[in-house]
Length: 332
Image (cartoon, rainbow, N blue to C red; front, side, top):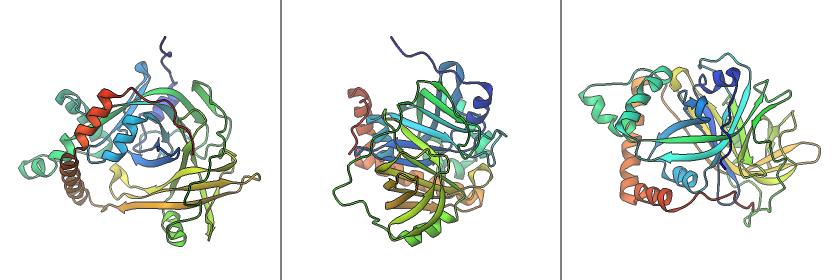
């Protein structure tokens, strides 16, 4: 017997269809979590209990992880430049299905949504050629909602309302990685970059295998890592792999700046948290729409051609068709 469709109220629906960006978290084979920014463009069908987003085939590693381990989360954590005035922090957890070859009908039906959030689609001989892969080679990720947790405040303060399956409780600490838990990249440099980004969330694997995403603040750094503040006690005690996202954006996601970290989170009994970054990736996009589109078009072309040469598309199709979705992965 299938699980009942998760239904959410009008207040949550306003957030899901109003935010211009959300934080996507997915789990790694080692039991950690990666969190990055995506543009949902209002993709939420309440009657079906489904939310989603689109991405590029060029991001093959992310897609392969989602195909092989579809438990993921979307955190609607900022109202900036969106269409909702709600103060809620909304966390959606569910199982993903990846539409690797969307129909022309689905792509065209998505255009009005993309236009509303990201601005008019550029047309013309030059633009069509430049943006062919960026607009046409899209992948849709549909998330069958398992649980929604909504806090009344964007800092995840106050009493949360849960819709769907009840949370499984705090996850147990994880075994440390073989290469140690300490920082592996320049902490001071990362601290400076993250301090300049106003939106920050941290993700970790929950007890039931779904990622958990919570807002955090920076409180300095030292040789051990970044000092994080979670004033509402949402970070579980002990050590574990975790992902950290910091980003900034302007209207229609022009002028993007983002930093994606993976690393080790250690939370003491008194709630103090230290995050030791192990990897760091980021970019800053130009605050000009035409320049942004040129950049996106070139990046999409490069990523798509690289994916074709490396067989990413075929590998993803094979994984999606030949494997049943795996259950929650083991920590460690």
